[in-house]
Image 1: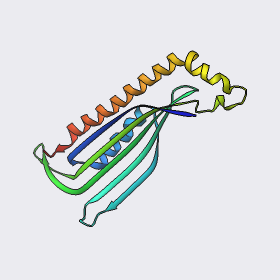
Image 2: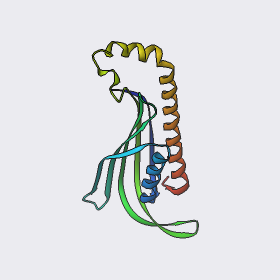
Image 3: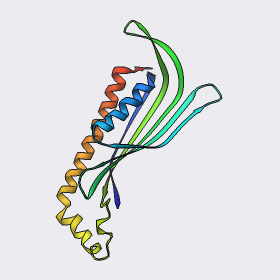
Length: 167
């Protein structure tokens, strides 16, 4: 099994936000795109000044064929969380003031079922990946890059529609 980095993205936001909606939207977006979301870490702590911090790490996996798998590592840090009431569209709404930092790293995992780990087949792996399967692998890399851009744009759009930026 070989992981090959394809691309990465980052979405930062400072302002007012409903964190539960943000979390749900991010999770549903990955599920909608066909990924299995595995939560590797969820850390919630309260600082001495009363502000809260949340850190989470997800490993999102999607099998695209019997040889290739997409893997997106999600690292989300939300800091300086303070509950607040803001006026949005003429109504008082309870939100959280916070700073968010969403980092996404996309990788293609080749031979995730270890087809070529057999001593007899191992010499053919190079030929398979460089000649026979190269065009397909390049297509998958392009598709993964498109999906990461889609996720990045969706999260930016969500923050622009639902959040209130602090300038």
